[in-house]
Length: 151
Image 1: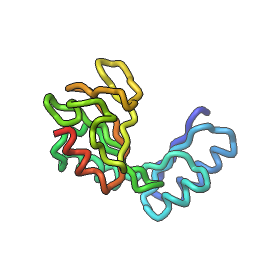
Image 2 (image 1 turned 180 degrees about the vertical axis):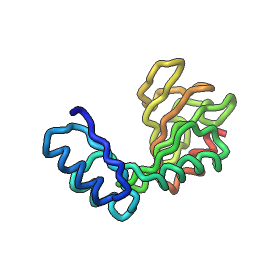
Image 3 (image 1 turned 90 degrees about the vertical axis):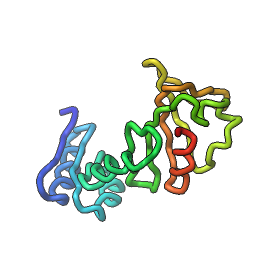
């Protein structure tokens, strides 16, 4: 098998099933883990990808509370970081200069840009344009600051 997905109603069963699948040679495993306390444990023992319905719903709802145009928002369970896909609006602060010349928050990084179906790795010399989709990795302390760059 290339992948194994465990979605029983029991977090422990899903974790153990994924571990067994890994032992049997399955490269990619996905476990539904409803007990948030188990997420770090499952990650540390190499379960693979964990899905938590509450965290997925919270991320989905959270993106609608922001003023910026957020396409996707994902909370990284192993750290306190979030990954967001934002769309640069016409005239927004993020489009005014090259990244190195912007006072972008230190606790956030721009990972990449999608412009007209082309992927661009962000560097200091990169100029973000209106309608670019921008992938931002950020700590909670910088979310509001990042949001201001995209309004």
